[in-house]
Image 1 (cartoon, rainbow, N blue to C red):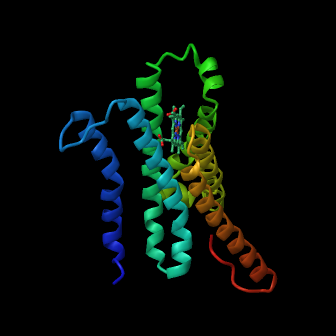
Image 2: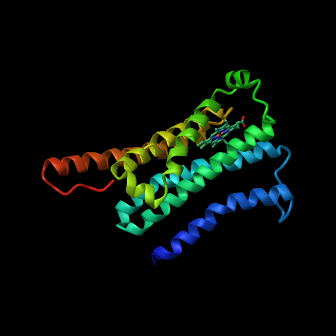
Image 3: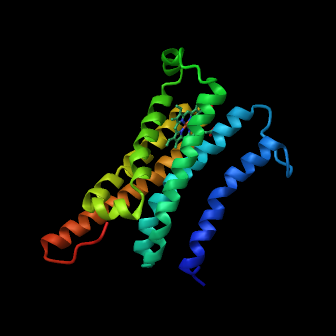
Length: 209
Ligand code: HEM
């Protein structure tokens, strides 16, 4: 039985909070949770992976809507995007505050040592205008420009997967799986755009992005 649209939002909300709740439990050492021998690494791992997973899930919303015809599912996209931004920001803060101690004097050497940080930073910076324009008022005010701006989600996800792939030291299987899923989602998007362009030139109805 399909989940009713009104229960989908609170479900997604609670699910998106679970990684943060587990992290807090790990920091406090409660509910059998621990951050292990390298807590900063574990925090970077949980926040980075959650941000990336949320980006990927955000991109699957449109294909799911196209396949099931459930328009209401679109409503959870903004929530997923905002959670993604929150986790990416937390990920950055763990790095800047706990790993670097807010000491950026050696940033040049750090970037040479870990160049993937630049790719992650570009992704995070690009998420800012999306989060900042996520209100209904700005969506209405910007109109088509809003849609164009929010297409940034595609290059941002590419940067996220690239950042992940680049920082992996040995086993690249998992980032490659992410890359394959992303390629499929982008392929779907391309196919849908081509189909709508074709329908347009044939005088058909334009597919809503
Ligand atoms: C949208 C933005 C970002 C996403 C989606 C993202 C995602 C990820 C992911 C998936 C990992 C691998 C975690 C693991 O499996 O252990 C990771 C690691 C890491 N990221 Fe990010 N990241 C982003 C932005 C940033 C930024 C802005 C910085 C710092 C300026 C950063 C610094 C790091 C560091 C230091 C690691 C750990 C690498 C290591 O263990 O050596 N990331 N990130």
